[in-house]
Length: 224
Image (cartoon, rainbow, N blue to C red; front, side, top):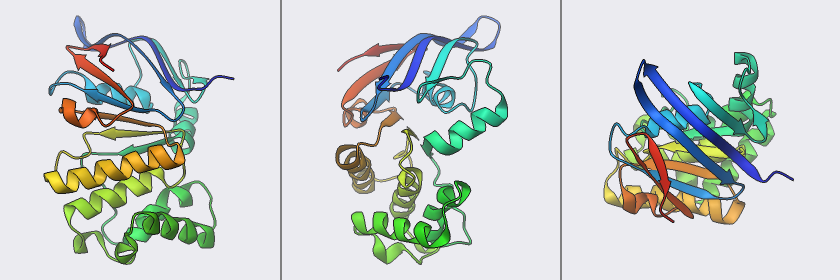
């Protein structure tokens, strides 16, 4: 059985002739791994995540998500995979401002057709898992930045997707809140087997992963 959640084979990405953002990237992410990728701004990290999440397509090479080859895949099929198989944690929190933290966590379950009572139960269970029950009925504006980003992380993971992609998720947080977020992500990975790929400008932050890669000038190399 194929245990790879993500597989990139000789992936290149160019936005203009001769300008290669990614250069022959090869990466296999196994089920239950926490992969940290670090590199300077402009090294191609966000582009790499966009290809993994089918928000963009490679100029050349193969991207497989949860065992499905995505080359030639139509947008409706790509949207299905994004909805069913991929969770996202963005640099910004992207919470819906006029609904509560619990309701924000319920959104991906609602999109997946989960009934209301089950959505509520699962959202409250994950809030309780991290001692955040007190935030359940608060609006985003009533929470700190660190609290909002932890709610965004729970929202990304509540459906137990095949993989969670995190794009510099601590970039707007202070050290204490960054640690709290990384601890939450590591707990999902360790205790529930959630597969995570996180990109960061910090080698130390990427080091929380079970595997660590460096992206430099579009080329990916494994460090641990």
